[in-house]
Amino acid sequence: MISFGQANKVPVFESGKDGYKSFRIPAVIKLPNHDLLAFCEGRVNSSSDFGNIDIVMKRSSDNGNTWSSIIVLANYDSLQAGNPAPVVDITNPKFPQGKIYLFYNTGNNFESEVTKGFGVREVWYISSTDNGLTWSKGVNITTQTHRPNQPKVNPLYNFKEDWRSYANTPGHALQITKGLYKGRIFVPANHSMGAPKNHFEEYYAHAFYSDDHGKTFKLTESVNVAGSNESTAAEISNNGIMLNARNQQGDIKSRILAISHNGGVHWDTTYFDKQLPDPVCEGSILNIGFKNNKHLLAFCNAADTKNRNNLTLRISYDEGMTWKKNIVIDNAIDPKMMSNNSAYSDIVLMNNNNIGILYEKDDYSKIVFTVMDWQKN
Image 1 (tube, one colour):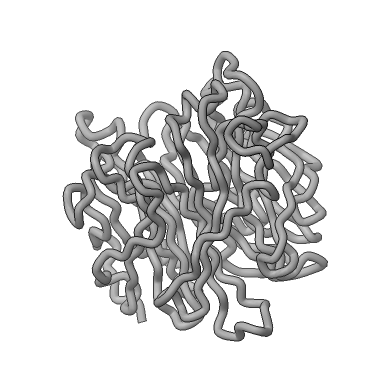
Image 2: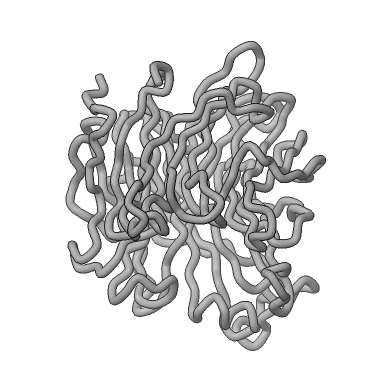
């Protein structure tokens, strides 16, 4: 039973504690045994997006009311390990209790330098078959999921397309539950292609996926919208995937939607959804049920066109065509706190009535967890 009150926001990661100056980029999943795992970047020396950054985790066995001590899962020495994207594979008969995959990126330079061709971002995963108590060694899947033209850095990278910057979702990844592609592990991502352009026009959203429980991976088609960036995905009917991306150009302050009807391999339709305002920030989409042959969807982001503020949970009963229910999770009234009151977030289905929200709060000073009864609100 969920014992949360609506206003109860439990600090999970707090800047300046556990040996880290800052925590950013939250992700959360629920395990088959009902434990919650919360992940984020632990930034050792500063809040900078590049530097000595680890991927860290905490566990809750009481629906998010309390959390364990911190555990370091990925450490790239003094360089960057980031963008945690967890998902539980519940379709592999070898692991009837589920197998967790945690996808992440490593980098050896600032993003601005990588986009100029100085450095490389790689793609890895670790896995766990005991509900996250122990984890495998890192598996490098860069050559399957990335197209970096970096022969001087690594002779294996010799592709025609010159992808440079690269980042997973951030937030949870997806496993398809119905239809032709049932069991597919699907990880939204984005990349820059070629040299930097004006207004971030070199960025494109894409995804990678596995149909054999993580043995091999393939790339999807890129979303044909220049500036499409950090992305998140949900399953829809008719073997479909909805990809929901940030518009890095910032000229249109709303989310970019891409629709596929072959499990995300190709994108049939792309458009800006004016129902989903966004200040150029991350968002999270989640399947929360299935009714009348349609998936119920939840979406959470900083629903503001100027500031990272007004964190809002939206519910769609028609697979994202409309969002009938809108619930404000956190909204700063004080102008001093409006710029970064509530930024990145991830959401998790607790039960039929409750959605958990793990999000950055108060100018990135903490990552907190709260639970919302979306049926009542």
